[in-house]
Image (tube, rainbow, N blue to C red):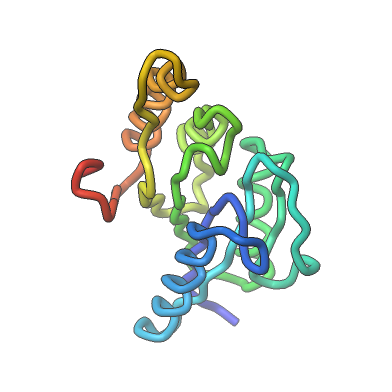
Length: 167
């Protein structure tokens, strides 16, 4: 089977409760419906290790152990399994899903070191960074979160958001 592959990278996937993962699977399903020849794959890459059904042709679970090499290896495995002609990635960015403090610098590094077989990298920002008062934890991580989101945006081919303030 030769197809255009779009791999959605998310913190978690159903059946785990994850608004971002649910959204990604709905978008993926719709992409396949309206674009003949497009097949969507999914990589769960959140910082918390979660149980998912066994890896299949289009799903890889690297949660709890995501680094640059592991991420691109998972994407490459799906592409190889499906004999994809082209491979694109959609990163569904929600900082706290990918890193405990909301600063997934590993994802930024991964995008900077994107392999040649990934022809497009699109980031969908579900959130950018925390805000809050000085006595709140998010206040102290906000500068690093902003920096990480900025690097991810810079190394993405396209960026999207559904939040006016984020735009």
